Image 1 (cartoon, helix red, strand yellow):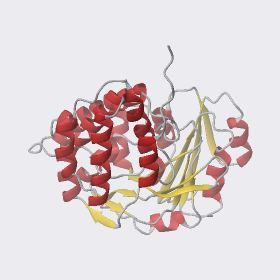
Image 2: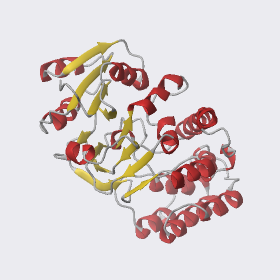
Image 3: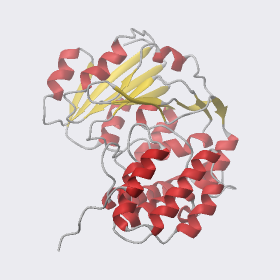
Length: 341
């Protein structure tokens, strides 16, 4: 490992035998002498450890304990001031490490970049997940978090965190993931640097923890709601420690919470009850006019159509790949399957 690494890449792997070598090689092939790479096998029961061992990288095998604990184990085995937690089924693109490191300094708490969505074989599904602008901000993002509890940010593999921010993960016993409270707390620790260029890849293969690539279901929305509320309570504690004069919103009054609840109602077979409170919240969000119109149309139609149509629209809303107005219309007029007696 380099004597004074600038960036640590930690890959936590659980049963990703088919993908983990691609993640490792996406780092090794960049041949950076200012980065350290550690792979943690989180008690895999497939052939992941054999694949990792053959790669020759610094690696550890631990008892299965979840992604957050595996990443913390890796954090303790590295020393660079900045950390990227790369999911074992994702990859970084050639030259990405240099582009990241060139933008890091002591005032940066987090750097983020969009990911290109790929399938299990590496074929491109869609780009810019999520679309991001290039900026460097702190106060405006902090104010947005205080008001809404979220801001546009990529999944785990599209983020680099300053090491002191990562220490908050030790308090997050309620969470199995690492891209939770530290995403939200970042603007209270320093600048957030955003890159618009896609310099990583997010793989969709049906086993993603995010649920992308699968039909939305009630259990996943309820999980997201419970996790969001737990993260907000933790964030409230963090903010009070750092800025005692600041206080957090009521998370149940935010657009994000209301949208999750709306989707949960549909997925549960209920008539959505939150339309009147949801649309005004949407108007205050930083989406384009086109997106706001499309989202308002989805909310309205999902509220008045039969539940099977609402579920079809919900699946369309969260599908991977391109979505068009024509595709949206087809979900509305598609013949209904005959009901069973």
